[in-house]
Image 1 (tube, rainbow, N blue to C red):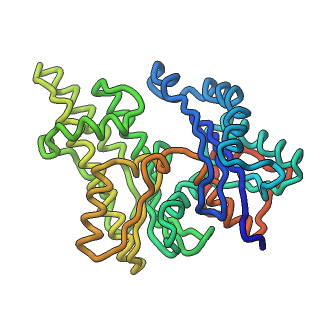
Image 2: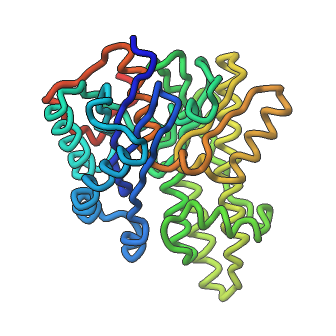
Amino acid sequence: MKDSVLILSIESSCDETAAAVVENGRNVLSNVISSQIEIHKQFGGVVPEVASRKHIENINDVVSEALINANVSCEQLDAVAVTYGPGLVGALLVGVNFAKGLSYAWNKPLIGVNHIEGHISANYIENKNLEPPFICMVASGGHTHLVYVKNYGEYEILGKTRDDAAGEAFDKIARAIGLGYPGGPLIDEISKRGNKDAIKFPRVIIDDDTLDFSFSGLKSAVLNYIHNSEQKNEKIVIEDVAASFQEAVVDVLVLKTIEAAQIKNCHTITLAGGVASNSRLRERIMDECIRLNYKFTKPSPILCTDNAAMIGCAGYYKYLNKQFADSSLNAMPNLELTE
C-alpha cells in the first residue's frame, strides 16, 4: 500500500456541487462547494430540475478547482469516489456520470459512496484519533438515523424517523413562521432570542421499545398553534415559537442518542448531517456527555452540510478494502445505509 492515497471525491446529491481531494481519508487537501441556496430561496425549497441543471453547469469547474487547490494532477490520483445515493435522482446522476467519465479517461478505480456514510465519516476528518465503535446521530433534511458504527463500513441502524426527518421539520416550520429557506440555520439563529419554555410542544417518544423518531405530530402541533393564535388575533412571538419548537426536537434527539449509547454500552457519541450544526443540539449533547463522562466529537458546520471531503473520507476505507464499482454504477435515490 502506498504511503499516500489520494482520492478525488464528488458530491451532488442535492443542491451543492462539491469536489475534494482527500489524502489517506483524513487529510483534506481541497474542499470546493458550489452552493445553490440563493437560487432555491425564491422557491422556498430545492427544485430538483433546477438543481440538476446547475450541477451540469458547475461540476467541471468545481472538480478542476479542487485539483488546482490541492496542487494534484490526475496522474497522482489513486481513485475517484462519488455519492450514488440517497438523494435526488437527477442530481445524483450528474455526479455519478461525471465520475464514471473521469474514472474511464484517467484509468482510475471508481468508488461509489453512500451519502449517509459520508456524513458519518466527516467525523474522522477533524477528529484524527476517532476510531469505531461509536454512536452517531445523523440528522439532516432527508434523514434522521441513530447509527451504531461497529467498524469502518459496518453499521447497525438503531432507530430512524418514521415520517419527517428533523431537518425537513425545521424547513417546514421556518416557512410557516415566515423565516424562509433554508430553515435550520434561520431557526437556530432566531431561537437564541426566544424563550424555549414559552410554548409546550409535544415530545414524541412513540414507545419505550423503539429508538425510532416521529416529527410529523410536532410539526402539526406548531402549525395548529399558529393557526389558532391567528384566529384569536393573538400575537405570535416567532422567536418563542422557533425556540420552543427547536427545544422539542432537540429533547427527543438527545434522549434517544443517549439511550442508544447506553444500550450498546458505547461511550463515544458523534453527530453528523446538516442538523448536526445546530448550536442547541451540540450544546445539549455535549452537556449530557460531560455528565456521563462520555467522549463527544462533532464536525465543524462546513463538514455537517453536504460536501465532498466526507465522501473522500468514506471512499478511502472502501479503497483499502478494494470495494470498487464498475461502469454499471447508477444513481440510487433511495439507497439504504445497510442492506
